Length: 375
Image 1: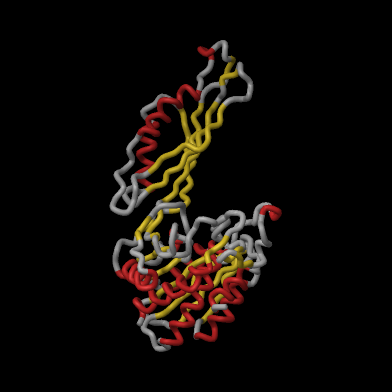
Image 2: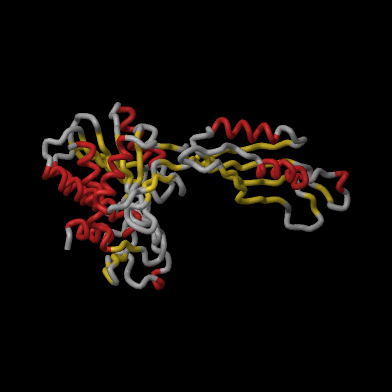
């Protein structure tokens, strides 16, 4: 059994459902400390975070990820215990196999091999690990990033081990993510009897043309890496439940998934400009889930694409699709952030798995990327 596979199985066996790390980071510390890493455990609320660094020089290359996993779902639907790593039909099954304990194991073993071969490598290597990625993400990576910013520690390159591949290991690298911003729009009317509409003001009727204009608005063109910004309504709440009552207000939940072609402030201003054209009283409560980040083609993207090509023969595509990740926090303190990991077809599902044939090549890609950056 390869060392990467063995460590992956060790980590899967630790039932680290958010926010419980269950000793995953302690095991990492046991492996990293003998390599010369200074390891810090950063606790926040019920979350455990790890910051580990080997060396003091620049550039600093950081591996980032999470030890927490999502809940298993119905146990009786799994074909094997989700926390008993099981090999069958050329695959390794278990919660976290794809998202993202294989990546964690591959990163650690890649660093072990790299340091053994290049003990006097240039620059520094770091690990930024949390047990709060699958949860609220308020006590995890962002806390460590704030700590590093206060210290003035400069990150130069970061590789997040999210499962980015689709059909084959190495076919997709995420070189950015769209931003996410939600709004709760409340349009106020006057409640009344539906038979006397002149004595009431129906907020649903008031909202309809404004919502239609927001839905039809073209927010931006996107750019080379991003599709155009999307505005979508997710919920509309209005009415008392009775069929003879005009409601006093209607509440609309909406979300922007936006690119670097737009800004939080600009999108908010444009929404207000549209709404202000209409004759109604309204209020919006904004929530910014994450700002977009982008790492254009350059040193880090080139180092990773070359490593993938050397290991697999695949020319990786750069993509910014998908939801948010902890990369949004790291990008605030690191100029180049990418995500790369195994195929994501089974993540968060019953019988989550990774094909065994991808495990050691994943480790080799991480090692080759380090060699391209620090050798």
